[in-house]
Image (cartoon, rainbow, N blue to C red; front, side, top):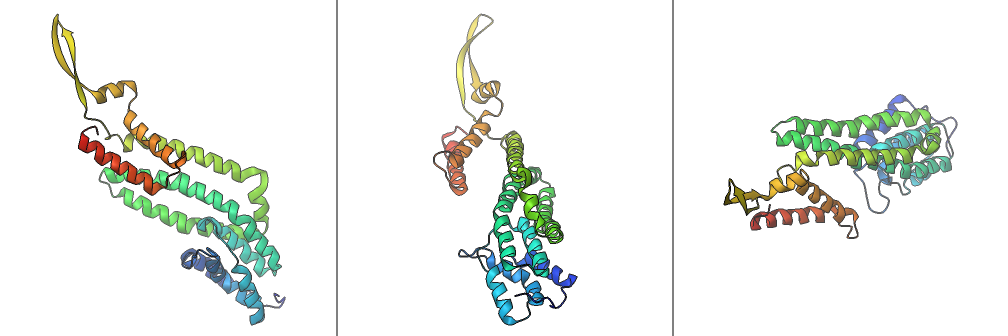
Length: 278
């Protein structure tokens, strides 16, 4: 059990927890307990201060080696709150309950904000800059990685550390998570959809056909580009259909993985080029 006369936890100890979490949290990821070992290693500087005996330290580490898995940047808020509770001498069950209660909701928020919203949008911007021959795309991705991998972790860690157990009520209150997840999903898909014409504008068909028309009373043959006809029906029709097809493969009854979808699009690209329709 924690000792009421334990060595005082210093700011340096708390910073050690944060730095370990920022740079080593995922090093020991495994299929059995996911991120548990990284969490235990990160919070160990605090456990060493608040547990009087090696036996107490061993028991505390065993608690933190229970299954844990969440979105890494969002998880910084969890380890910040857990650090505060351990420092205050809270019961082990309280710390474990906080971890279990938050890892799922924060994983949902983090995956939505990162995987569905920000990363695809930033990636599309970066790709657009790269296609235009600008190094801005490279630096944009670097800055985004630093922001999400370092800046967000630092901010959430200190928020969790200062607010402690209150972060549980704040996260679940008022359906905030559901509204944030839904809104982020809608915004992300809308923005990505808006980039379809600019990124895939070069996907056109070279097909042509001839038709007989009357010009000044004389019949003549005129070559008509199929792409011009499609543009009159709906601009960027082929890119839109390709994106819709890829989305159907991902989310439709087939439930293909992204790798399979990419391979299918490669086959379509090469096949369409060989037979002359793309």
